[in-house]
Image (cartoon, rainbow, N blue to C red; front, side):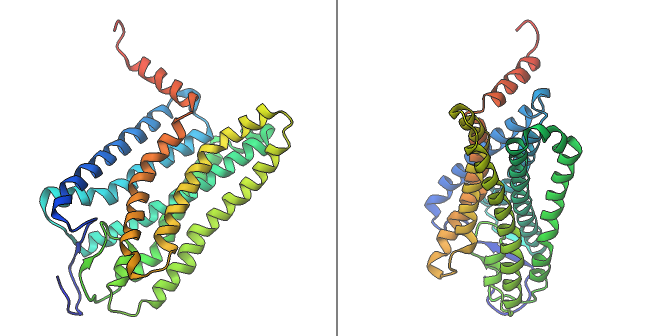
Length: 312
């Protein structure tokens, strides 16, 4: 481990645990979770290609699945590679790239969830105008804006961290290159980048999407309560329940990961919340959307039937 205050060419990723007896268990668990993430999200993507599912809701759900696969791949692959090769080092440039990609994909996911809340708002509050407002062109513009915004928002933070010239250590107490663990081992004055991360990062990238989603659901709940029949209210709420569960799950983990006090006693707990955010959430998202979604299940069956050779 390097301890002198000098520029470094590589970092050492500490990983989830230092206990040698747990390494095989961690590897098998992460591998299983990653395979489930791939299978479940690819299944969602395949189902969304069905002609009857070419709607705004499933279009944004497909974008969410792509983001979940990408985010988990970027973060979890290092755990698997470390166990297989025994090499815990990562080059400085690769570490910056991983930090940038993770942050960008996370921001894009929050934006996609915001677009999905707008889609549900139009569907419930303005049903007669739904197909006019949420036309394919609008959906593509919203999705493109979410991806572009996500990759632009993180750039200033990563640029400032990339400019750091010295570190007190090159060991990162995490299982991937995240901005907070890297800031903590820098020997430079990090006040500016921490302030920027809090104000522009957390308030703009997290609070703004949350407020937009919250406002959307205020109007949605108000519209649902005005529906006279109980069956109509249940049907309207059912169309939003999966999205609302995903939003609550993601924001709870992000709050625990980035907004809780930065005390030394919480370092390990923050790492666990990061693991939950990068592994459990991408695994649970497709399950939440498909658990009671009969339309999605029927679409997948139709695709499998079409793919099955005739006569079998």
